[in-house]
Amino acid sequence: MKRWLSRLLQVAVLLLPALALYAWQTRDLLPHGARSPAPGLDLRRLNGGNFDGEAIGGRPAVLYFFATWCGVCAASAPQLRWYERFFGEAAPLVLVALDYRSPGEVQAWLAEHRIDAEVLLGDAATAEAFRIRGFPTYYIVDSEGRIAARDFGFTTLPGLWWRTRWAG
Image (tube, rainbow, N blue to C red; front, side, top):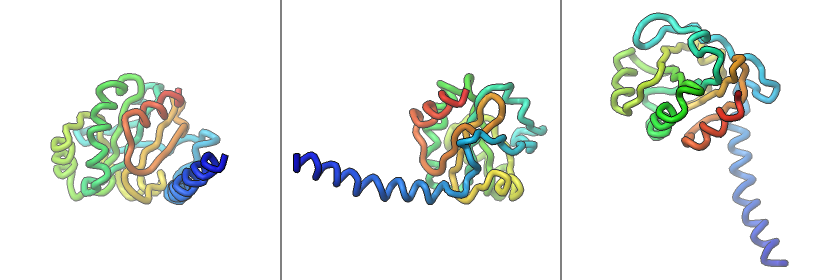
């Protein structure tokens, strides 16, 4: 019994700080428990024209906010590529560039990381509306445009799939 209790204490010592850090990192993000509506995304597309939420077509979607200089965003790029390939039809991936010098810089970042997804050019108002305080930040919106999940930092393919699976 003592060995079991000792292991439980070890797990708690490791898990509690990680949960506390996660809660601190996500404290300012838009709420998701009540499934509040996501702010609008009336932004310019990287490849020209304007984007509006109608383009998603009543499906869940992943809104991924990134910066071209962000190392964690670059490390997450393979996960985004795989997500787009396997799950993008059911729940599209929409990248929103927020901190960049030029559209050319965003295009170069996408080419370097071989990402072929919808890309929008955000601005300070976009960052404020979505309460973006760091990169990467992502929101999962359901088919009615409500926030079903949100997170900050590195993500994995199973993590994205799991969150979009329940966004319906």
